[in-house]
Length: 219
Image 1 (cartoon, helix red, strand yellow):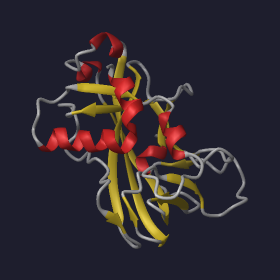
Image 2 (cartoon, rainbow, N blue to C red):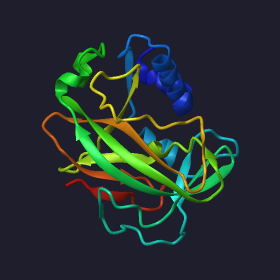
Image 3 (cartoon, rainbow, N blue to C red):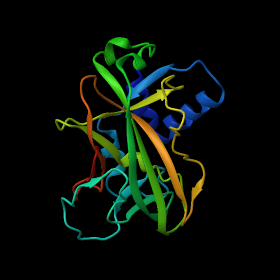
Image 4 (cartoon, rainbow, N blue to C red):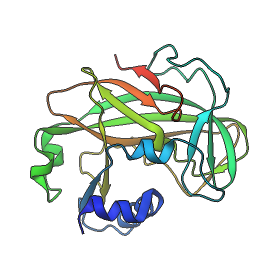
């Protein structure tokens, strides 16, 4: 079964669990990769059913104006974002911190080199701060994070089973197992695919179906 097919059957939590399992048991890295184009919007938008593992994000201030002012990296979201997972809801401030762009050769060795021809990885770093509501186990903040190139093309989330040898040392996966409590800050990082000749112009955060995504300009 192709990687993308496998992912669509197991879902986000199971895929991330296997990713951590592969990494913790020191399997040969770069075993497979799944392209998550459009999936973050599917998982991260709209309410989730009770007990669902998927984190659903929405603005904590209903009725806020769409098309909020564009921020720059390092500035927190102007509104708290509610994220619900496992029947608990917390309020978070989201702060994209930086973007580190790699090189096309970073994708060599994935076993499907043709699929990644003409592309490169952009590592997106985000800090989340729990500012109210309930403690949430593994809120899956990065599910709602996206990126766009300077010409407006959307980046594609990349999931690697194992790890990319080019991963920056300070780029940590989001912890999906521990409980995120009020007052805590956590930094996390994830890889996205963009054309090799492009630059990331924005980092975005989905606010659901009915509000425009938040956007942060990349200097």
